Amino acid sequence: MVIDRKSGKAVSANKKGVKPHLAGSTTLKGKRKAVPAFELLAKKYDDEAYSPEAVEAVTGCLHRRRDALLPKSPTLPSTVKS
Image 1 (cartoon, helix red, strand yellow):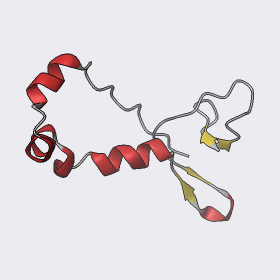
Image 2: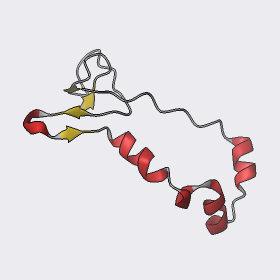
Image 3: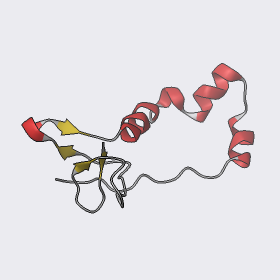
């Protein structure tokens, strides 16, 4: 299941032409709220414990060097309201 960008509804990920949202929420039958797994992961790792400085302290990998080698992080799309 994914949240379709066009309809804002939860649909099969295999449905032809579906374009999934990576962030947002929708209400399922029974009034349960659904959010994409990607959004849950993004929220989990958007924490100071996973900051470049904190990771450097644990791993010894210099975040300044890593930042020079990697592209900038993408911005999450705007959320879906249903």
